[in-house]
Image (cartoon, rainbow, N blue to C red; front, side, top):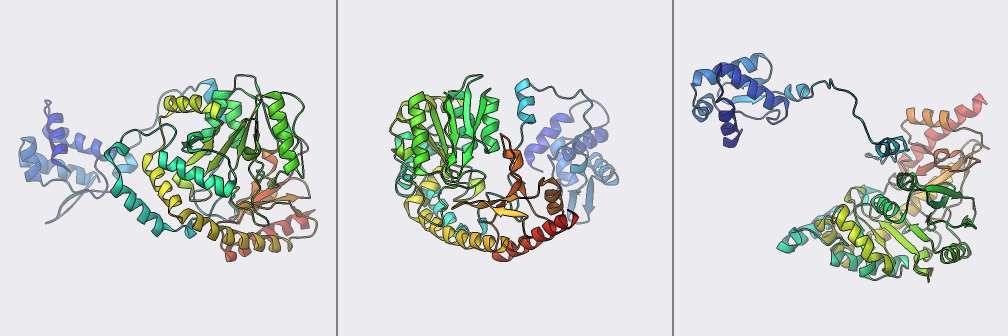
Length: 479
């Protein structure tokens, strides 16, 4: 406990009353609130008595009482220490009425949530292999960036993002993702979900229509519904979502690798969507959440690059290419929208952390990012091929692999009806099977699952498919 803590205790003990009782109460409260942590050493009785201006007998009596009550343990010649008990006592039972939320808050909590995995589990979708991330290179870059930070970079950052980071992202997107942009069009964010929330609230009024794919990322659905939009899901075929004939203020698409089914939108279908946007003066959000990973051919040109009418807003993230906890994403905005969105960013949360942007800028510009992506693409391609091969061993007429050329996961359709019982049985075996049905915004519903493979070793993939086969075989035997 610091000298400052002792001064605070002295002020507390200035009241009238029994000094031992007062000291016990103050110390007990500090332990229960976590201000004095488990294992923390308290001052000697002589030192604390001097600091508090009371007798050593008073402090000794208080320490002894707290030891008897289980808050302290005392070791001869070493001192008095806080036990592990205090934290368990720190949360009093709430006695008031249940908290009242706004209608908006209640609607938010009623929406399905995106459960981002915090550990690597078999078939968790959308998780990169963080064990393969070059931490030593990242640490070295971080060290050098920290040493070179200027005092100005410790102040509030640019709402659009650090200039060096936007330049590096722009260069990367032009070479690898065929995105046509300048650094001035980029806005760096904490996540692509944050970008969806911004765009929904800035571009949409209550009751306006948003066109989506028939199966849609739930984070986007939540963002649009929270803005009061009306969703108009579009039917899909092997070329992707089919454009509507009616007007809508906004469209949300995943053309590079549809979420969750996995198909890549054809060139002709992309042009149909761009023609629709131009004809109706509608915005298109192109969510390129894992477009870096295509395994059969080179990744297709982005929808944004084909756009001549400046109606496409491109979203990208580093969660799949670096690691999820970096919390760094970006959007490429048509020039006409940049001033408004940058000004809105200033009002909403000012800026994204400058240090992480500076590290990413250096990581990209020095070639580490491109090298990491090349290695991950090879690694994931091998794991994907293994999973596809092993899925052929599933019981006959139970599942069908849905066509996909990229991504960190595959989608399979279950051919025998509802998936809920199988999902529950798989969960008991430690498998995470994200169902397709809840992502369907139209009927008929597609029954099946999303199988993540990127974070799994070959041995883990084999074990996971073996367990999946056991569950499927058990379900088949009951039919």
